Image 1 (cartoon, one colour):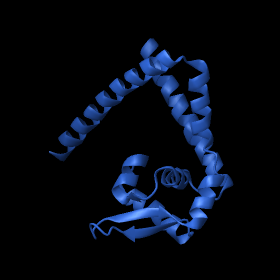
Image 2 (image 1 turned 90 degrees about the vertical axis):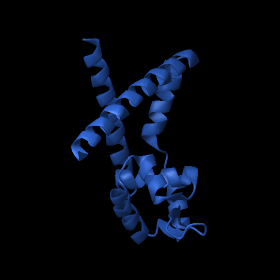
Image 3 (image 1 turned 60 degrees about the vertical axis):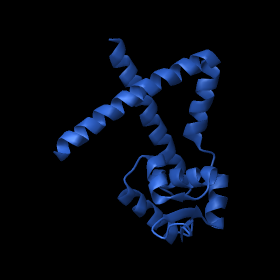
Image 4 (image 1 turned 180 degrees about the vertical axis):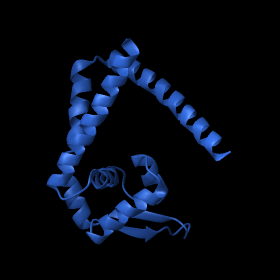
Length: 151
């Protein structure tokens, strides 16, 4: 069935992305989530813990643990917001910047290259529209499940 093949393909792409990320992270003495945090902070600059949690799709408590370990390694530091003392921003240290710059985020580059080479600009637009539609539906279903579990 077509839907099954689509789901299998998405799972394959996700699994390969995780495997490649884990392998690359291990070569640099990091975990996959630490590698993701380093690249996100390198690309976007300082982020609050909540913003970072949203970017890597993880709970604040999970990201706190990741940041704690990276801070002990001297890769990131916490800085309180001057606007709102309750907000803590996470930033890369010099060591963290050097590490992040040295990382070629292989999964991202592999998939980017595959999409650019295999699909036309029009097909990319269509794919994005379809994926956005599926993502919106899944988010609603997850939220509905969370709401039902909370009641």
